Image 1 (tube, helix red, strand yellow):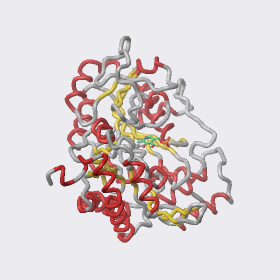
Image 2: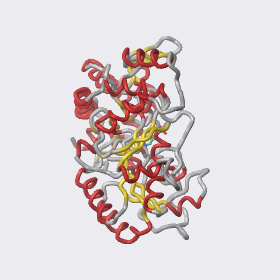
Image 3: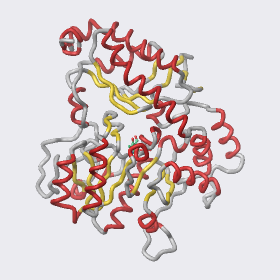
Image 4: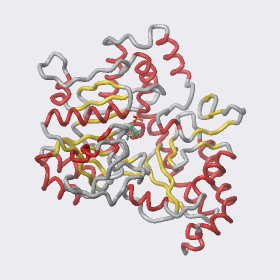
Length: 419
Ligand SMILES: Cc1ncc(COP(=O)(O)O)c(C=O)c1O
């Protein structure tokens, strides 16, 4: 790609693409939004990073605390990876316990704990479990991550409150925190059942285990904790809060965050040359100020339409697919049947021959850019017309791929599904 403007990206040959990727959902205003350009131009003339406390940080923090009621105090870093790493560190320091519980298939960035059992399915389910904490499902190594890290991570299946109840009853005294996405993003746009998420809150409170919501991806839809009225102890944020510049944030209960106060003896260390730099905060603040509750709802409504209408367009082309997601962030799954956890999503990716690649290429040929794995994110410059263009393109692509699907993956055909 060469450049972007609004919801369109243009490649080096001059071809335009509607951008349904939005930098892994991180750019909610698409590209070159005038308010963000103005903020960037103003800030670069005043220094990109002064490395001191700055007013724009307090202003950004005020918006974050207002929109995420569980965040009483917030700190800034560069990415979602750092934000989740630091919530986990805060929880370990506060509780004096080492084990964290994460969801099997959950993605929280690149640090060692987060890489264990993440969404790709590249790990080895037959890995011997001797010496590892009992958890359901079993821990699996990630390449390049020391095996010893697996001793401090326990796994739970998503949307399964009974399993969480059992694990915490057995091991709560060793567990610092449970980290969970209220909707699993990278793993397949899988919403957490609201009763499940509320149940996790009750359960962790009862067992004196901290609850971390990773809202790096879901902040754009609400955040979801606000929509569901759930108050986690800690929250991680990134992506849209930087307005297209790198920015992460984490925050939560005042007493937990107070551990980072450098004037306290034995504080938890947190610093970084570019964490919360002026540039990211200034452009991020402009992004948040132009994406208030009304804009969030408008964009979510467009997304809900896509989630509803895309499977119907596919059905008209003779192909079964399912959309999961909430509002402006969603995922396409081939075939039918429930998608309650990342394992369901992975199973639906098996046996598709080259369909995902062909689908992706055929959409590119029609001027639509998506994540190859089927994750779609909307941006505010999109109109109903862009949504319709996308739906029509999917319909036409599936008609075009019909013969391939009949030959290689006939179970995806509506006629074979009996509908
Ligand atoms: C839920 C979640 N947490 C953490 C991250 C990591 O963020 P970053 O890529 O900024 O390190 C991501 C990124 O995809 C994410 O979706």
